Length: 470
Image (cartoon, rainbow, N blue to C red; front, side, top):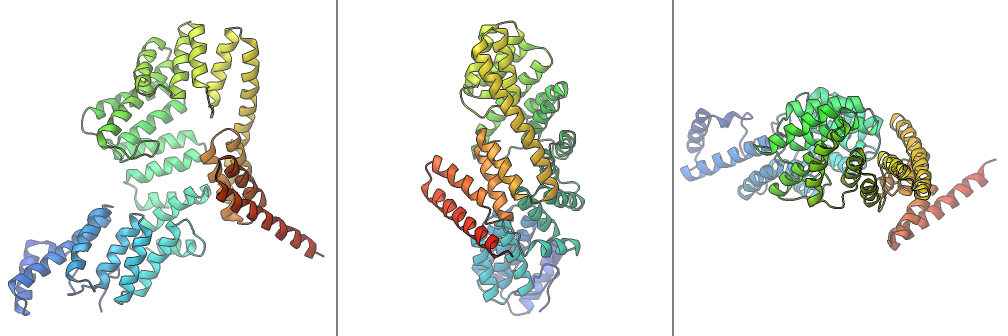
C-alpha cells in the first residue's frame, strides 16, 4: 500500500495529494472511474468523497476542526471501513481537544489496519494533551527536529502543555522553536507574550504583542492585551493610542474571540460590547497617568454603569477624585474597591495615601500593615517565579509560591502552582497538606480527604526511607 508523508493511502483509490482539486483532474478522474466500470452516479459519489477528504485535510491545516470532522463524517458514511478516514477524523478530534472521541476513532483506524506508527504518534499526542508528558516529551520533540509533517502541531502541544504545568523554561524553549516554524502566525506571538509575562519581562512581552497585532490587526483581544501591557509598562500615551485604535476597530469589522477575557463563552455582540467597555476603562486609566482626571472620570463612569463592582475601575475612580482634590469622595471610592481581596499592590498604596491625606490615621495604619505584608509577599513571589521558571522543577518553591497566592486570595492561581509541584513530586507532603487544608476550607470534602490521605502516605514513606538509611 502506498502512503504519503501523513500516512494516507488513497483508499479506496490511490491518487497524488491535491491532484483532484483542479477541473482538469476531476474530469480525468471521472473518465477513469467510468472506464473502470463505475456508473456515472458511482463516479459522482466517488468524486464527492475525494473532494470531501481533501477539504477535510485543508480544514485541519487551517485549524477549522469542526469543518474537518463534518467532511470526514461524510467520507465515512460512504466508506465506513476506511482506516484512512477514521485516522484523519481522529487527527481532527485530537487537535480540537476531543481526546476521548479521538481515541475512539484511532481504535477504528487500528481495526481497519491503518499505519501503526501514525496511530502511535497520535496516542502520544493524546497523552501529552492530557497533561502527561512523561515518556513522550522527548519523542515528540525529536519528531519536530526530524521535520515530521506534523511538527507545527507537535511543538504547539509541547509549548502549551509545558506552560499550563508552569514549566516556564521549557515552555519558552518550545515557543521559540514554534516561532521558527511559524514566524507569520499571530497566535504564536501572543502565546510567546504570555510565556514572557510569566517571567515578568514586560518589555519583551509588549514587543511580542506588538508583533501579534501587526500580523492580526483585527483581533480585538490582542489589541486590548497590548493596551493593558502598555499601561503596565508605564507607557500611558501609547496605551491611549492603542485603546483608541481598539474602539475604532470595534465600530468596523473586528475579529472577535469566542470567549471573554475571563474565559466565558458569549455571543459576538456581547463580546464586542464588553471589549468596548474595557477599552473605555483602559483609556480612562491611561488618561489618569497622563494627568487628565476629568476626562478619565467620564470614561470610567461609563464603564462602571455596566460593571459597578469592578475593583480596578472603582480604585481608578477614587484616583480621579483624589487628583481633582475631592479627598472624601476619593476615600469612599477606594473603600468600595477594597471590600474584598485580592488586592493589587498599587491599589493599596493609593488607598493608604488617600487615608493619610484625609487624616484617618487608624484606618491608614491598618492598611499600611496590609500593604507591607502584601509587598513582601509579592517580592518573594516574583523571586520564586523567576527561580522556578529557570529551573523547571523545584517542587518546594512551587508549594511556597502557591501558599503565598492562597494567602492573598489568588486561589485558582495558587492551587495551580501547588498542583504543578505534584507533577514533579507526586508524594510531596507539604503540597498535599496545603491542598487538603484548602479544600476543607472550601467545603470540598472528597478532595480534602484524598490529599490528607496522600500527605499521610507521603509522611510514612519518608519515615521509612529515613529509617532504612545506614
